[in-house]
Length: 395
Ligand SMILES: Cc1ncc(COP(=O)(O)O)c(C=O)c1O
Image 1 (spheres, protein in one colour):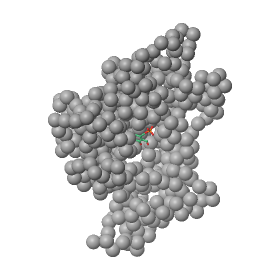
Image 2 (cartoon, protein in one colour; image 1 turned 45 degrees about the horizontal axis):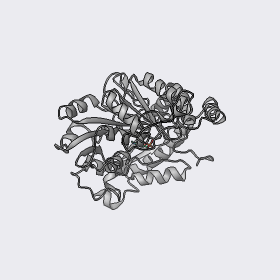
Image 3 (cartoon, rainbow, N blue to C red; image 1 turned 120 degrees about the vertical axis):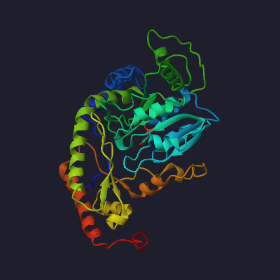
């Protein structure tokens, strides 16, 4: 057992980023201001998309994007069930109905075929999610959706760092929402960014994200600002504060080096796991120019093969002082969403029980990876003897 605990994730803020946030606090610009503008411009340049709207979470970005796309009562929004609840939650907040799509068991993301099974004339938006940061075949999904007059919104929470045929994931659909939550590839503590090439979506999202005000409220407090404003639509209070944007500017600059660290750790996991019985991993990227962001490193434990199940892996890791997580309990199984009708989701129902996310963050060492692999190796050795296979699973 390790003498120090290895957390599932640890954010990586350097001295410059902490100083930049402190500078905002010292200067007294606490809410949305010049740092947010600078962060938006830098993000837009980095991903190559005209509009980048900084908000206080990815959930906020999904919410204003769906609203800006005109989602309302009577509409359906397709979302994977194997994702964080944010997309379904925002759909319901707008009075529309979330429709759960199954996923491909290898990529853990939706496919055109799984979408085809649930699309209806009421479908207004399809939310896709590149699971763990593995690029999905977004071009095919966009073609499928646009042929039916449906918009595609990417939940790109895991995708800062994901490349889709050489371009940032999130740049080929109607809009994408990134997350800067503490466990993501870049963080602002809490925060999100909506990117879109669509002028109308960008303008509506900006207005909706700040109470529905007709122009940037922060300008009212500058020398050139005027006190008068109008509220043109009931909106939300979703603006990003400047101290967080200051952190984001530094994190974005360091994204390539943090990504390189994730790549190396993921390679070590993949090498180690290739020798172990009982564990499999998500299918790798499939096109030239693709890159997995390794926002999460997820292994699948099929108890029929392994002789032990996912829960046992979590317990053994915890006993060895190592954190882990599960992404995700499918949304259709959560209390607040269980009442929603849905098509059969056999892949989701089967695969989520097998998933465990291992520790992965840039400051982790190779020896940390070895500690995790040691636990899995011990389990694999014991499982191959079939010692811990519960009777119900052995049938
Ligand atoms: C797939 C996915 N979507 C959306 C979110 C929500 O992000 P945020 O916490 O920035 O609202 C998360 C956060 O964990 C996520 O993993």
